[in-house]
Image 1 (tube, rainbow, N blue to C red):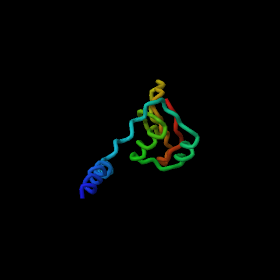
Image 2: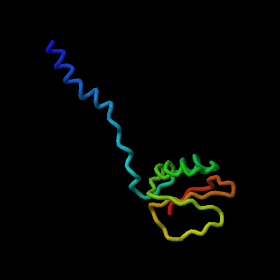
Image 3: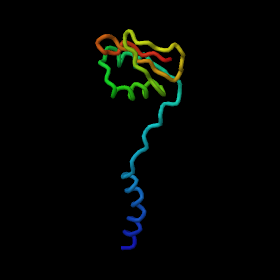
Image 4: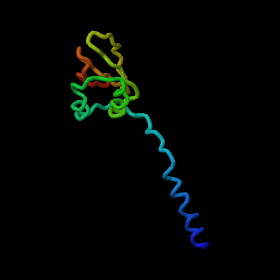
Length: 98
């Protein structure tokens, strides 16, 4: 009987560890990196605001801005910023760092 109690006591922390929630992934920490894989994945895809976090995470960007045809944009270069370029149909036409 005491063996069962000790076994249960030893296994209790392991069982409870499965109930813990995982911490969210850390925010991207490095400069923006747009891979060819990311360009291909998002090229021609209709842009939705909810996609923004996933694109930022994949490109290691701290922030992003969406640029449509004719939008004014500052020319300052920020290595941690992603530019999401859209066409007239609101489809992604390009991803650029800066």
